[in-house]
Length: 215
Image 1 (cartoon, rainbow, N blue to C red):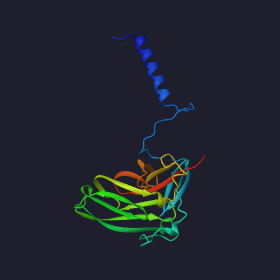
Image 2: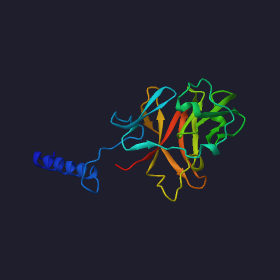
Image 3: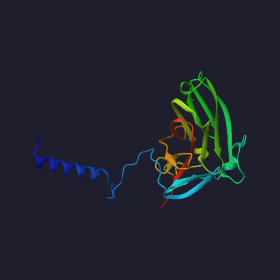
Image 4: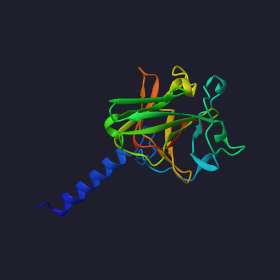
């Protein structure tokens, strides 16, 4: 059996190690943050979208699309209210089938790749909507749960971001927009070959792409 003194020394040593790991290079403590953690209520700003107040996390702002005139507008989103940001959202609908190994559905360089085996039924209509003013994407029908992961792809060209002037891995984040307007960060990576941000999910939702702003 270990002596009480050795146990106390071991406890002190482990505490020092934990504190060292939790500190940044400048000595300030940084609590671990999960990728699916809900953001706190201290926000930089709030965006109203289709009547929903989206609470942005502190230090982040929505990516704005200065070149909306270059986007295709095949049809407006149904049920838009006058004055909403969502009134500028456009959509396409495409058929996805289980018999196809990979369904690729895109609109304005934004879309999803759905393995046929992940579809919940033999075939279904998939809707991809993008806003022309803010980088907000919507995939439907909402409530669709897949039997495997699907890829959400958001091209640099839609975002209007220059990879040579912004750190896409550090300064860009994708958030799920929940029904109450709070956000969950979506794990994603940069596909440099395909020039797109890519995230994995197993259900359809609305997403907002944000950019880090200097404090």
